[in-house]
Length: 440
Image (cartoon, rainbow, N blue to C red; front, top):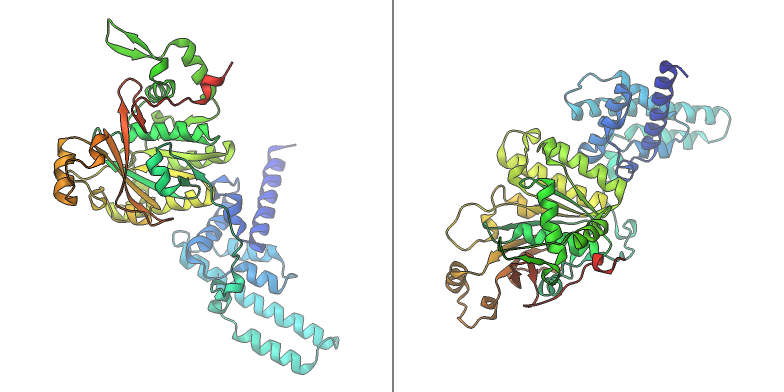
């Protein structure tokens, strides 16, 4: 087969795909397709117009008209949009123009069909007049009635939610765990153990048979894995080097942990840069190929958001919206780290750096606190807590600032930091065994 034949075959296959999407355009989300996946530039432009219209503009639902007149040729729809690409940089205007032309042609062809039925005595003249009158009144807004639903239109079948436990007893008792399809924002001052705890969440998720992907903007992949391996090993399995005064993972355990984590833990190679668009595209592709359910992005400050615009807060809003949509679309849970603004006061949700939409869009918002003298002083001032408050016995606490599912807020979950393994424990001396310890 020649190169030209291959080009033609790919183009025809893509046109068949686009025809399918015209008939049932909600498949755009289901099929997880993007314009840049297509080989043909023309098809790519058509598909981009469709995606933008379906997700943003939604001027008219083409499938609505196809449903009324199934005999109306899909190819003509495609040709109309293809030949009408006047405003390539203004997709909303382009789509509206295309829809006006399509609607006009739709009316003409529909009336021609009615006229044929009338001439063949398949409908009465009165019926013909009524249908023509009804058709003449159809405009773009009329095709949007399917956007407004009654109770009977809504699928109210109960859907069991999937919760991924955090491993922190207090946190899981409050919110049951992290729900697939949601976005969690994490913040906290330096040395509050944000990254440490998210590494632990990765291990806990893998223990529940959920694959995990991590982007770390601050650590190399090797350093990140070494840190996670130390967490996975646990204090009882570490060896102490008295000369250098540190604990390390013996090779026999390290190899088992590697084996356990292989094909379960995925790490974004940040040597390819920090462009946010490219990161999300790579993550989405990896999630779909490997059935990943947990994504950890550490952190906002290490990402280049330039492709989302020029205004700082507008950029962050667009990015957060895309993260939230990705979590829902792929049915995954995304953990996203956002550093707080510099502050000498007790950290609150409003102190998370950036647009307020960072926390408004998120389903959950957590702040990690280190229990030190500043924490004690600030919480006593803010909450009027006394010296005997049980929260002060912990080394670290997770503050639940927002939880959409149960409405939990201003709740604290306590943990104890274990220096040797860098684990956060439910109680001092807690022994947690991960799956690698059961391997042969």
